[in-house]
Image (cartoon, rainbow, N blue to C red):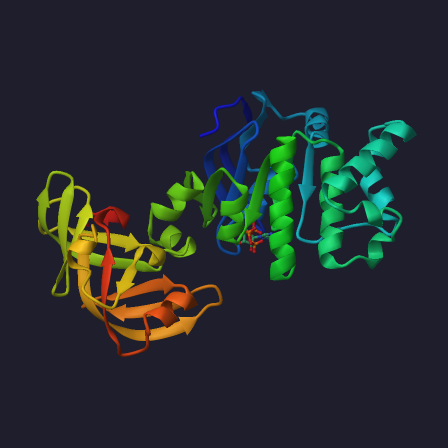
Length: 365
Ligand SMILES: Nc1ncnc2c1ncn2[C@@H]1O[C@H](COP(=O)(O)OP(=O)(O)OP(=O)(O)O)[C@@H](O)[C@H]1O
């Protein structure tokens, strides 16, 4: 966890758009040098939260505080916005050279010509666009234009940068290259940032805290690893790629361990509960191991099941494999592993996973 000074806080934010309440955030905070990702499905309220935090959208109730000071007057809003840069999905460049686009924010700040020249070239270097300085911004590819947008944002040395789906219009390789470069720039400059994205891998790559937005609320906030592996509910689980979400009944409980029954199978998990209670649990597909022989004593995994492969779908870098273990389970394996193990539909295999890799979402309903 980052333990730096508090930069941005919001309380009791409630926002209506088109007469409908679309945001309800009782508490929000962002610490200095933190990179927070907002993830969530379309229409969940990520952009609305960013616009409200940028004081570009007026909430019906609630306050935004910057370094402990409430931003209320028009003057305080103006000063606040000057410290903030925003990048949107559309680069929004004007019809001028790349240099002039990056220089625009500096001219407003009345920097000298020499300072502007130095700052623009320095920033273009940061985004690998020095060679494009004299080119027309209107003739750039989508990826190049978004690099210029990033340069324009970073050129003013903002105290905070808000990025709203910055790379979602780009093709996958360009998107990956820009995500990697942005991660380097954020690290190098130490800029505090909020990135709204649908892409959990982008969020994982860029941020040190993740907030999941759903139905206008922040439903979970924590380290990316925590959110990915310990989702708070079924919706978050589905959104972070937790493909196996199952219901079972507690059969037995001992200190910190539960035995759950699902169909005729028993599953050992870490957790507390009482016999007869229902539990909803999940396992990430990458934590499911497939072997052709019974691993027996060769594995420390507590849960081992003879299973049948029911479906295999190639997904590029991995194959998605559906298994019938007495209950249905999905596993990810590399194409190489699928080849080495001669896996095919109908093949009998053994599936195993550790008690510690099972996450209980709910118990007791
Ligand atoms: N200008 C607007 N007028 C009325 N309603 C709006 C407006 N903009 C957004 N909304 C509504 O507010 C809700 C939240 O939208 P918002 O754009 O904040 O979500 P989002 O999570 O950023 O979605 P996306 O990922 O698709 O950009 C949605 O129900 C949307 O229809």
